[in-house]
Length: 298
Ligand code: NDP
Image (cartoon, rainbow, N blue to C red; front, side, top):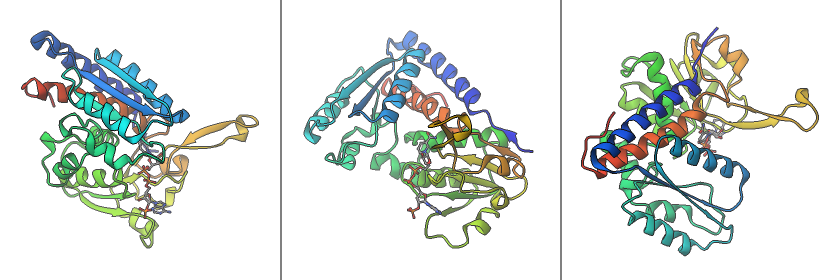
């Protein structure tokens, strides 16, 4: 039976450390880490994420700002807000919650965020730095960064000799995950919807990352015995066993069958999910250190 990787506890460790380094920067330089979160529209899941981010930012001792904008906000109005945050010295990190309403070009908004405040790591400059191995000066997207920290807790920092398979090639999860694993010396394959015989490929992986967005797709007999399985997926499915109309969260891997084969596995919820917010806080405080000309704590 695989060990369960307790993302909630590891995320709590990360945020506790963020608070210590944020407090120390404030004491030393008078600079309070500032994080601005911008949300457009009423998407209920996004509202929950934004509320959690604001709460965690305050718990870390940050100056936390939320811009809640109506669904019909124009693209230009959003650009103007991002630009004003770019120019605000009290703000070190800017996050625009995705998805944005359809009438707004999310790509334009992301590229408007100053790269040095792009704590989501989606700006081309940060994507390029990650892709070329300039990780120390980049901002790395929070979900893959958090996933790497979980892998590190199990296998250490150097993944030399390990094979890794990332299922999913999104810009937010799959591709940055690929680059991080590569930078840690793993031999990495990235798979997607056009990959042939995905099951056999997954079975070659010492480290298997499920980032597909398909509930419980990866089964135990796809997993190499002893593999480390990181399940990034968050899917809400019906749970009639809990009562009529009830739902529950599941990952992209079938937890029970995978747990029987893997050596370590992340649960959903309580695995990668909490790490995403923790890494956002870590990126924000890193940005504050950089802006102060101080060495950012690792
Ligand atoms: P996307 O929908 O952007 O990407 C999904 C990827 O999976 C695509 O590359 C797609 O391939 C691939 N894929 C889809 N179906 C199959 C299939 N049958 N076989 C092989 N590959 C397939 O999703 P995200 O990357 O944004 O998210 C992935 C998962 O992670 C979701 O469950 C999401 O909810 C979760 N997530 C969790 C976060 C967290 O904080 N824990 C944060 C972000 C996401 P193709 O490119 O060919 O279409």
